[in-house]
Length: 344
Image 1 (cartoon, rainbow, N blue to C red):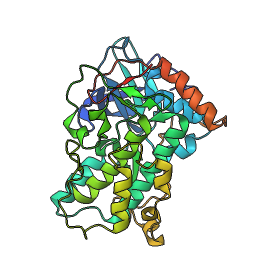
Image 2: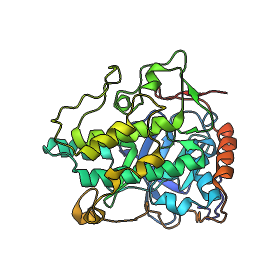
Image 3: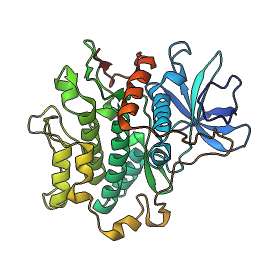
């Protein structure tokens, strides 16, 4: 595998993968397989795209555009502690694929299902830690000029007791709103509970408030096992007594999930919320289990992968401009019905 820090296509595939070893469920854009680096023998995750190579070239996907923007801004090291970012991309005449770090504890959706199957929800201390990591990742993304637009439990991956935001395939620039397609199909049922209400009710929406709503919805889901009925004007449908969650937690959920996107708190504002001023002991608690704590751990970077160290530092405004330019090169074809189109 080419070890140059610049991102480019590897003409002869350096990674192998087994199609029988699928990681997670089939997504709208592709499937993710467990793979192996032929050079080092290390395990990786490989996302193989459904669409023909001519329609979806990996270097023009939002994942790669975001990865390049983070490196240009000098934020790559910080981002790797919070996000699952591409290690490389490869393509040949038959397929195109992204190579990603392999996370060792699955995703937050499976973790939450297991918890509730055992009759226990996530405690507030661990939910605070989760919220802080998702918010820090989102602030970094927004500062770069991008919004995720598909934050949900299955797009939060777990590794050594830490949560990482993943799958940026639906990301949109924050510099302009997005418009719903005139002939839009019903959204993926797994995504509905994490989609902001304006995405169903308004023809034009802004990216940042949608991400904030989704983070609140994730925290609500891990704490209560439920979601929000966005078809109801009164909003929240919570199957628990008022005293189950602390007042600070309920206030955090209310600010992150305000039905009016103009009143909804920003990711920066939520990072300063009193609920996130967690006790010192909570910093030592692991998100997945107390024995698996790995505070500050970055997503695994296999040996033999490209040495993508940051070599430049630029202002946030320059990064936002780069995101705008990069997004123009990203393909506009969408295969998942939860996506919207850019307003030109």
